[in-house]
Image (cartoon, rainbow, N blue to C red):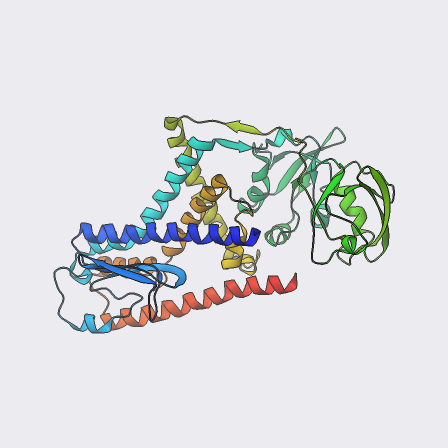
Length: 443
């Protein structure tokens, strides 16, 4: 059920983004009296799921959910309609319009995606406000892994600042270190302030999900929610709703101590001390080679941290939402820059549809849905404006060449460029989704 909810959210978000993007092209085209022959959500090679015609435009739903398109008369696009381009230019065609009009038509989708993201952020802040965990509220300090330990961080450290800059929202610290190439972290440990230097090789590891900085939580008894596919605990007789009190009668202060103890017992036997219907039971279990007992516990109902919520009136939410949108755009551009860095090797972390779909929550959450849709709208806009033939940015690149030189590229050149761009995009699609498949196989 969790996977289905993620898929439904992904498809719904993608549909909204594609419709808005293509609507931007459509409105700009009609504004400059350019004929739009087709407006499709998803691609329709060989057949469409349904279609209807209104005026000069055919509207439809394709069966291949890889995006969508509008077919504009007199333009070399995904349809590769060469026959139309052999005919004399007509006044209603894209190729007959002034260069600045064609530029507006081609950037319409990107503009609408940016505007959509800003609009979503405004209404999300108005409807739900902004809730976060203040860095000062992480009262038990942090917990990290061996990669974090290797640079000098320790479980229980309280982060004071990064490069001597205080970060209010604790969840932004990890991304701030990566995106802004931070050099140091200031922490409090045992009443003493320490300066942790971030070495150059740390950020590439962070991009692979290592060295995470999480809020430390106290240990408490856990109630079994469900069992994983490989579950020695279930095989040993543990049942749903059993309460795990301790392991080997050891008391743990923090949850990371519990996890570390299990990791130290890989492929060895431990005794689970559980409570079932008021009766205490001791159950021997062999820990897996990954340091797990194969149990998913119910979320704790105890409030551990005090979150901070900022509420906005409608008029306050407008500038706040715009600021949040532009910050998201700047952060994504910084992420994009990392992809081309040989030092970070961020290209190894590229993901496809599985990665994108997995970021949606397993339970339907409208606030999370709209925030993620806004971020994906920014990603779609940035990706489309790249100067790659077959993308909007490719068309813009050739239009700018025409404006600067006064010479328009030949239709034959544009045809070859379109084919080249489609090959590049297909290769990127295969690479990104191939990364997803390889990560899935390694699990």
